[in-house]
Amino acid sequence: MLTSLSIKNYALIEDININLQSGFTIITGETGAGKSIMLGALGLLLGDRADFGSIRDTQKKCIIEGSFTISNYKLEKFFTKEDLDYEANSIIRREILPSGKSRAFINDTPVKITSLQKLGNYLLDIHSQHETLSLGNAEYQFNVIDTIAKNESVILQYKDQLKQLKTFQKKFEELREAQSQAAKEYDYNLFLLNELEEANLKAGMLEELEERYEELNNVEELTENLSSAIGYLQQEEIGSLDSLKAIRANLTKIAQFSSTYEGFLERVQSVIIELDDLEAEMTDALDRVEANPEELEMVNQKLQILYNLQKKHNAENVEELLQIISELQEKVSVTENAESALTEIQKAIEDQKAVITKTADKLHANRKKIIPAFIEQTEHILKDLGMPNARLNIELVQGEDFLTNGRDKLEWYLAANKGGSFKEIKKAASGGELSRIMLAVKSILAAQSNLPTIIFDEIDTGVSGDIAQKMGEILQKMGNNMQVIAITHLPQIAGKGASHFKIFKEDNETATQTKIVKLEENDRIDELALMLGGNIKSDSARAHARALLN
Image (cartoon, rainbow, N blue to C red; front, top):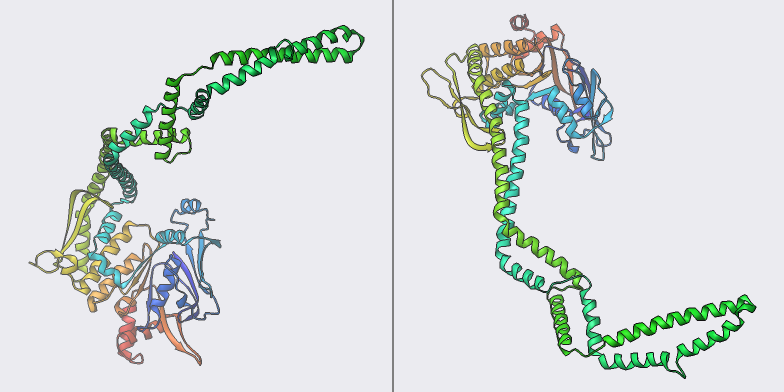
């Protein structure tokens, strides 16, 4: 529960600090006194968007700080998950700096606004005046039913399954679109692929073909020069080999005289062996050199094919052409295997639909189970609130489509008067009736939830007299199980509070300030007498106020 609230430099508030207690607390004040400002500050603690314009003195930072006792609400796991220090008395602080930057802290640890919002959902619910209108909103109606049905974990499971289903469906559409596009290009891609595959491309083949072409195209020059080179090695008078052999004979005679001469002999012998091998290889090469016009033409044709393919595909070499073949094979394969690929993903979709259907059915069954008791409880409370003939009807219909929270369509209907027909609740109820229905719903939710604190901002709009008295009794009863704070203009409700605060404006020499004070018994009597429209000095007005307190 909220044990204290400090607000500094926010809107009309310079510096206020209030301590709150459990049970039912009342806040009153004239219209425009600043009750909405306090709610705005609380909203910042819950993660609402910060507005630099709300700073009172733009040279100083705005600070809103709330202390919460949370030991009874099993929030240790949340703090562990968010990597925060758990404290039984936790402090949430929000700061708006003069620079416009906003900061948030939980137990002095800086946190993101999302963490603040998550924690706020466990700590406090602010019912604004506008929220009453949400009774006619399907999302709100679902939230009420699902809270009572304890569907939170099932809904989370359903949302995960729906996300997976949409992933499969998106993949299916993307594949179908890709295959549709591929089908349009299939014939052309297949033609390109066949053309490339017919070339029997291999890495390095271009270089090999170009080399062979040069050999075949220069047969005469090769024959002439190879023959001449071999001649220089073999001729008797000037042949290099014969000369080296003569040198070897001379060195053999003197090799034993010195290691130097022996080294000369070994080196000459090595040269002779190398030249012998060279002569044999050149002779072999010469034997293989022969004119072959047919092969020359064939090599030339292959080269032209390669050159044309490179130009056509803007490729630098054969290796790039091989990569293009791989890409074309994949594109062609997509089209050729289209049916099997679509069938596979379609099966995944159907399997996922079967899974999510079971979860949706569970949601439907849980909702259907609690609706009769919820209607009975609501109608019972409405009788106490001056609507004895009100009848509530909730239609829950399961459809085929997978929606964000199941397959159900939900609508609340109200027959406010005896013999009246059912109409959509937003059309059937007046403002005062909506307020009473909302209070009935909130009181039922409060009994179901483990929420520490709920704040009502003028839940009593449109009611008065005895009905207000009944509403006060319900709020007071809710305060037995949780902290209830009500902002009200009705003395019948204000008199039910265990504690009472008053918000008011005060002018000083330079500015107007919003302040808040806790009222003791005599001050409460004065405040209630004023709310009753009487003179606070009147004995009858004070007696009436005292009666409301008692």
